[in-house]
Image (cartoon, rainbow, N blue to C red; front, side, top):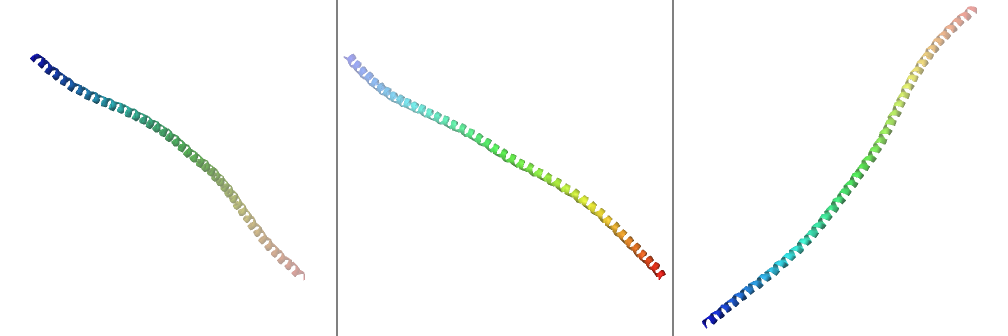
Length: 153
């Protein structure tokens, strides 16, 4: 009987151990389920973060494209502004060159007029000298005429 009772005790002990192991197994299963849920949650979070990162990369690429487009537009606007200013400056330079040409032409005309004026002044002096000579000759002739008439009367 002792063997039966020992066996019963052993069976009860084994049952108890089995029950404890079953409890441990259930706890492990619960831990495993929790780990699976955590893993699934991490996978979900990773997938969500990858999606967000993909969106951020897409937005970043779009922003870079927009930035490049704006930079190109600004470069084009600056080029057009500088081109217009250059054309305006070229026009002003041409106008200045025309004015310089006009001024040089006027200077040449002025020099010619000054030369002509000097020639006319010389001619006037010559005419004045000739007039004075003629007046002296006239006075001399009048004096001679007076003397000739004076002799006859």
